[in-house]
Image (tube, rainbow, N blue to C red; front, side):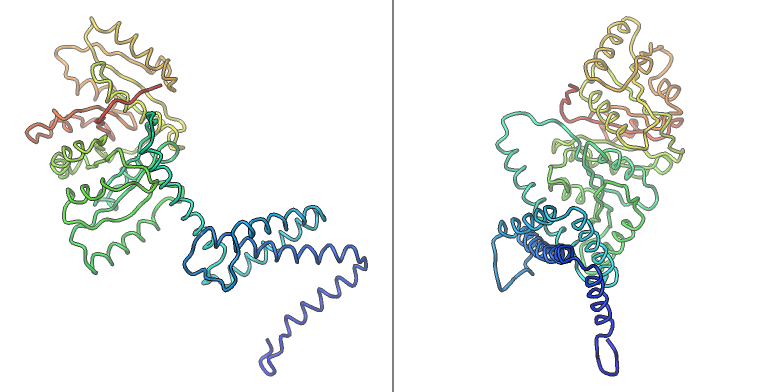
Length: 419
């Protein structure tokens, strides 16, 4: 707009240019088709906006003239259909022009709410309705649902090491769901709430954009109260959490006793428990996952194998593989080999026969020595455990694996079928 007389010079120039272009075209039918296209685009867009606002149920959408959502949807679909009936070429040109104009205006007025807000409201409504539907469906379900991990991890050491976050990303990339909560010690107050917002923003800024983990913060005076609060609510997917992940550093094992103290509380709630012993050794995924199973411990063995299969679905493990190990006596070897071969074949697991090894135990060599010798180069070693390992608060379960890299100790709180 010109400053001295407030005349819309730019708009006038553009209008004259458009008029001259249409006059130059000359053909009335062509001009009519083009003009009709833009009228239909305008009408269809208004109908789409009305439909999305109805479906999104935003409280700020309070039009003076109300319409039915299905009328708006029919209007949008009819406008698009008529456009394609008139001319495919002009329809594509109209859509392209409209999109380019929208992108330009959205970038120029970046502080305004655009279509992104409308779609976000619609997705929120869809997500809410789906979660309520799934909850009711689970309540009425007469058949057993297929197991998939919905894991939650709480740690105050996010900025010191990110192995637990990687583990959750492997779980949630394709087959499961992951929620990671950064623990802020203290009681909820204005000060801690402000600090939590700053920490969350820092986490989101540093997070890999390809991550599928939902990240948040939690303010709590202790790890016990943080877990007690968090495991009682559903995960971001709306699915109840069924797995809890603890984490500690092998070089600074101060959190061991905290894990032991909280293990029984979590296990009592019916959760599977994974304890990640983070190593400073570089994680080389092509060295694979080593899983140490035991014939008498089918529950933990099945869960570890399923987790290994889930991990391989992540691009990090594209060149990795799974190796199964079992330690037994010489008398048991033939039966154990047959059992493991059948498990791999019937479960259609991506494990070759060469990667299944039965080790004859020598009386003068401990189990931990055998594991250290065979898995020292593995990217991740998985070992099962049960509640008896934590009697009297001892930490023997975590000790004696100095040669290994990252270790995932796994406790299953129920049978997992490999079908």
